[in-house]
Image (cartoon, rainbow, N blue to C red; front, side, top):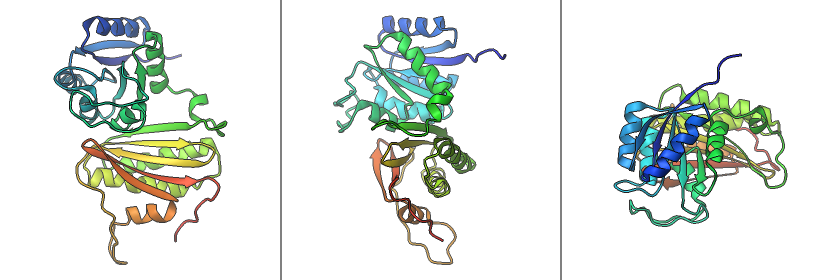
Length: 284
């Protein structure tokens, strides 16, 4: 049996005592080694860019630059890494942070996920929960990733971090086909994979950004989100019949039941939904 992997970690937290407690809990688990620390968001971005950790543990309310502003910058600096937010803010409401970002509706957990975080842990939780959350994200069990039929309103989710590279659409297609095959709920996997491929291609080519792909499944709907951190607004084009390319959003519009886009900091999220009760017919 191979030895368990040890994850290189950076802790970004402005309170030295709490930073020390987090470091101790991570290293006592035997699965993490803290290779760097920072006391504000700007230092955190620089530290992550230099050390390129597997994991960054990030506070939200900090001096100089807060966590919400630092989060997408860390994701851009280390696109293959995982960022988990640890904050004392109430995840049910979002106020105005030190960076001046306007409050937004929805849960704090959703906002930090839109900014690129893989997880959210409140400071009121035990440190053992942080360790377990990190391990669950880094090493998902078969039970977590392959549940076929959600019970009640429970949402099954999977996500994939993608670099801003030409092979990312191919990775995204494979991820979608594997996830929907494992969930085995009769959704049009090839159609979903095609739409995801088009959206990830847009992130690579037009936004010139890494991206994060999310699949959310419940009893009513499959929701797919592609987050990027590049510039430029999303533009739906109507290409001529002989034009090569430019059909990504046309494909999404025709194969999904709903789709849309919203700003998220310097980037955006593009989403589409498929109702499980009425599967769309593929367009020839």
